[in-house]
Picture (tube, rainbow, N blue to C red):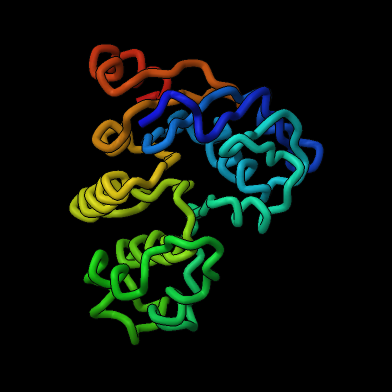
Length: 235
């Protein structure tokens, strides 16, 4: 892991129409790092991911990825730089099979995980290839949502609330998959409300309140300042 950031977000502001959601976000992510954005509901965490991906159109500031400014790039151009986004709602197509859902994202860069390797890494999906998206459990849908972005060739993953609404045993499984991806060299920016889950997987935690960063702690600092972190989250 180098000390030079792969992603640098500086003075990032974003709006939904006339409503301002981000008020000057500042943080970095280094290659190979797993960083969480944590904070209360409505703090601006998901908006930050959507802004990085270019989905939020009205924004200003700086988003530098791999040395290049992307703030004025379109979503497809940002994806071609090697960033993939897994939304909170998972966006599984109910009328398509697992196999069809898996092959929807195009390959944008060399080095994506092959379909065969994906099924080896996500054996539950191998067993459900012919099942419709609507027939999958919440955990299976989340596995599918993560798996299908891995074939694009992206090495920087934006994961929005992957543990949302899942049973504890499934959350643990999702955590194991995310840690495996980190071991494979993926860089991950993770939005997470579940502090226990975030503590298990992250190298660093960026605390967001009202659209700004109010604190940054590494894994050891979170353990030493758990009361402070819980106060940020209101738990």
